[in-house]
Length: 197
Length: 197
Image (tube, rainbow over all chains, first blue to last red; front, side, top):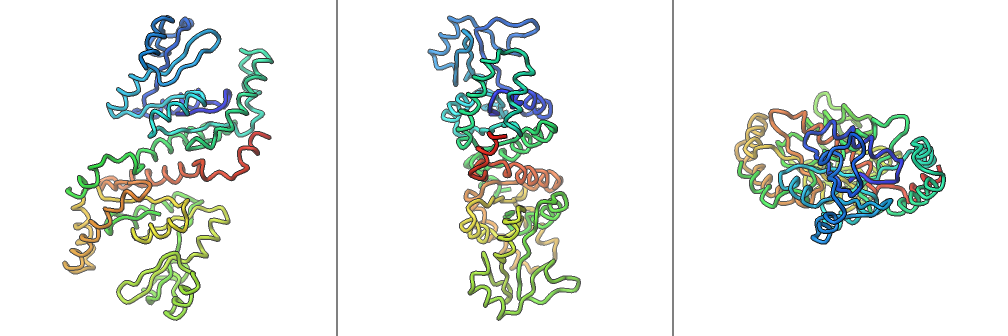
């Protein structure tokens, strides 16, 4: 999971990482909001009506969910379980709260906190998007400071250098690669199997 | 620390890794054996006479030491402490026992167990060296099986594919890179500093 404050560059970096890794599946979120022009079901989001979302939520169908701007968003559990069972690594970009909630369900999950090299860059990037009012940006900056208090619950801190985002992509790639060799991920019989070869 | 059974390829892979990483210092061992032709003091080993070795050992000068073939070998503590203080990462190739002993002194140390893709390759590589008798090789194979029982005390297991050793070098490099971002290595004030930028 790649998480961190809004404006740290999660979308761009995860997009670049996906382009490099064939064994990495991207977890698709579900939402009750209407598709925007060009958005496709099961690619950008799983688009659900509100009743169906709530039905699935009641049936423990989401790892985490939240309401934003009157719409429901959630991380579907089945897609992740099926992908992991098939031997894929799954990458997702939950919010900080969501990442910590998912980690409780999947203790083997790897939590990467992505932060900007300068905190003031967050505000500048949010302003550059021109999608939010000054009040909304101020609220996001408040949230960013709260999110920073959870860094110590993560596994890694990666700094996205504004001038060299490709370094952070290399960093993420190294973490994905290294984590595949962690001893705690070894199947119980792996050592015995190896000794018998 | 890169450890694992004799014949797994530690020397070759660590040599290749050193060639790639400027910020990686190689820990030089001390020994009481005489220099072989071409070996240089403070490059291949710190060559010490037995009295001096024992004096330093008594003074807690070695992280771990062992006697082999009548000669004493040890990992000097000062070189490692000074290198770490100067901000370098240090790489070493202790034996499995030594690696676990050093981890107790340096809980932040990263333990990588290097194993061959086929266990039978160990014997073949030892035979190809033509430096040991059949009895010595049999003893090393016994030791290798004992060493495998300690894999779960390590952090990572990297498999050295006989036909593609460069993959294992990439794996080691990814681990070195990823470990630099581990949250538990962050200085206490790093987060506050970041928020004030």
